[in-house]
Image (tube, rainbow, N blue to C red; front, side, top):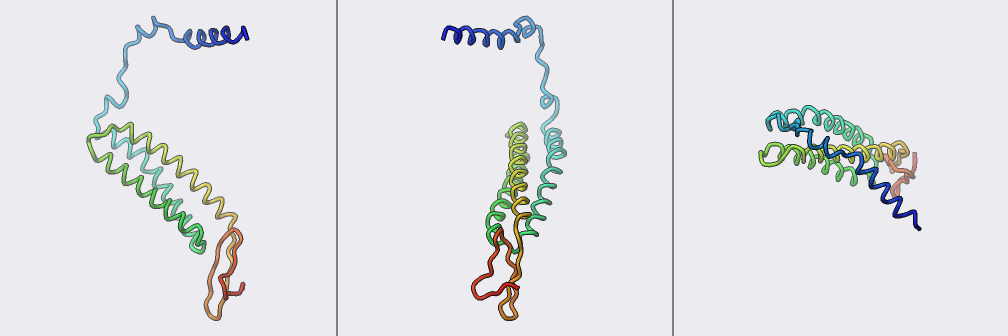
Length: 159
């Protein structure tokens, strides 16, 4: 019990010991990189960095969409994901077009959303790889069903 206050004191000294007041006073504040660029240049830099990333993710989403054409359970969730993706892009475009917001807000938002969509697409691709497709027939009507455990609809027979 006597060691806890000593440990806390030692930890705080180590943490605070790394910051020297004399060094902090001597260092002149350097302008941030965004302060030297105009807003138009910052927006252009944003587009050069993030547009290719979002375009790549959109292409992956379109590939996923083509693979789930027969998976009714995934179609609904995918619609919501695609709508969210398009909403994020629209929000970024509208926000960058306005001159009232700082670029840093959009950079952090874009980073967060790119990571979120990357994770979502990974999970979708993983589920697609586990899914199976079967062909079901009812007279001359043929249906393809895709799911983890696909079953033919009522009245259809597995081909």
